Length: 209
Image (cartoon, rainbow, N blue to C red):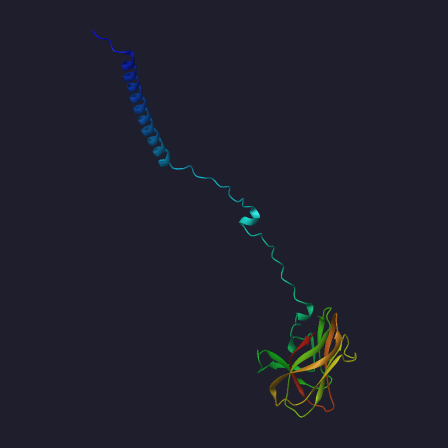
């Protein structure tokens, strides 16, 4: 029986090993391709980016404190209207319903030496410089209305000349200048004329800064 020569044997053995290596190499390539494909199909992990830190001051606008409303200037506060019939003392006059704006009563039949008195009127710290007067007259007599402080005999601090307005219910508003007045005073409204007789109706008066 012939024995195979070592050369032939080694040649076939080498070929067999080569085939095995080739098969293993091919299997390795297939496996590597499979793993590569799986790796590519795997979703990437989300990339976490640092978020901007939002501070309390950035998240919401800073609260602003409400400014207090400005108090009105004392000069902007009007004096109250003094209704003539509401005087503390009415001397020599009578009251009657007025056919004027706002209705109410008025003081009529005013003659010289009559007067009205208003107690404890507060002019405040800002001086009053005028007085507005709602008057009517239906006579040809010209008289004067005077504002005095604290005494009926004190020198007038303001004066208004009054003449016929066209009728005893024909009302108009006149303004008289005052010497500057401040503080609390008793206000006297006095009347004088050269002729005797009724010459004036008075509805109201109001001091003005």
